[in-house]
Image (cartoon, rainbow, N blue to C red; front, side):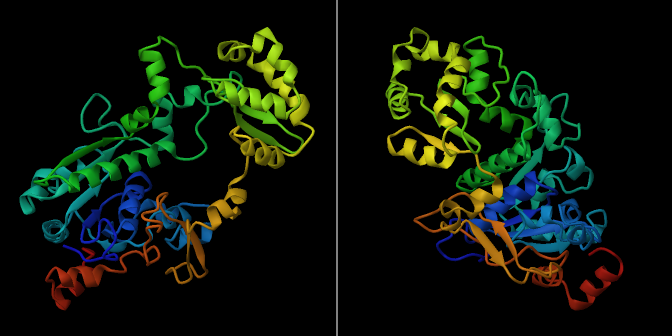
Length: 403
């Protein structure tokens, strides 16, 4: 058992082997690392995680510390192993014997073909929690298909309901399927660690993870018989509820309750709308939402979005200006809640970097890792020595490309 993380960290004492690449798996293990687990990232010799070569900074990508890698690998250790070599397989089996969790996101069947599948590693450690993340799960007609985020967004129906009638289908502007799949995996792993006895095999489908988050859309179809359609920036469940034009940009307003609708009209000086039959009920307002939006914008366009947001929230009408990513990261609501971590000495980076932590606080404290993302293989020697390999054996393994 590992002893990483402060004693108060929920997963202190848990060792996780991260055999994953790119985003869904690394993101799952990123959550576990911040919650106190010791995460050993097992990477391919000479190249490592593909994300090491991805991101908006070509120089960092060329150095194997791409921004896409930096984003979700802080606090992990890096061990390189050639899992096709018998000695690499042996090292992984030794590690599995001392671990609590293995996470992998190979296509179904790859780990078995390597001789390192669930049954093999469970033989080394019956209490091992084994989590396999894939695009479509371990069974079914699509199980062997390769899957990237955009592929899953497309087949899940997400793209079909994103955008409006003119622009749909559109992908969500960040890797939704990868991150939702990663969060689903982290949740399932935490649950499995609480089971007695341990030893769960977890089958994570990115497709099903996304569909599970689409509860309202899916249920409106299954129960209400409604064919989901793209709604643009309008909330189909209520009106006025959506995006409205202000003097300097857009604002989201969600006057979903009747009392909020009344408060909004009065604050805008448009009490006359309360007497319009087409706006008298929620269903009427939904049917005539475009006319209603135009009426409200006659007033909203006279002032700035953030001013309206401040005033409307003050009278109990939920509202918020549409902001950019840099704007919200700099805002005190995020900047003053310990959400960002600065690392001054990340290996191979050469400058300070700021990274996001997880979106949870425990007893008023944001769980966090202490170390920056690792250079490829930086912990190999120490980990192999801890497994009982001699200096001579490690040197030979390095020379022959096993590590």
